Length: 142
Image 1 (cartoon, rainbow, N blue to C red):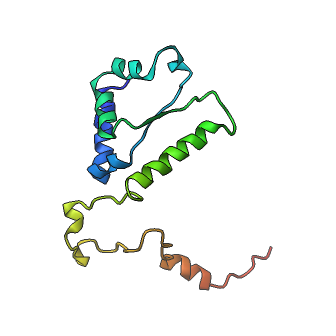
Image 2: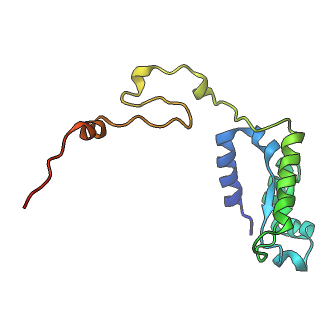
């Protein structure tokens, strides 16, 4: 059951990326074999307003996956096609909005000892590690 707690968690996650994330969102329903007995529309109605809210925010884009099908299956390819179509419709990849606090220039003295680096860049080695590489180790004799 989709609850107001689920909705609040989604709202928390969305707040990290900004409202534009909804343009790039597809809800994926799993356990399609359980939904075989009722239509997806009936299931959505039965789950309540919180699930309806999520689906309305993402323009009712959803996909249903059957978890009981293992290995390569056309459903994975169809999901990827939907994602590619969504990316094309929305003009490319998602770029998160900057928060107001991120836009302000940061003073280097505010976070002493914190290295600033680009996303994906390798961290600098600590001085202790580089010192240990320079030290010569004598073999231990019995």
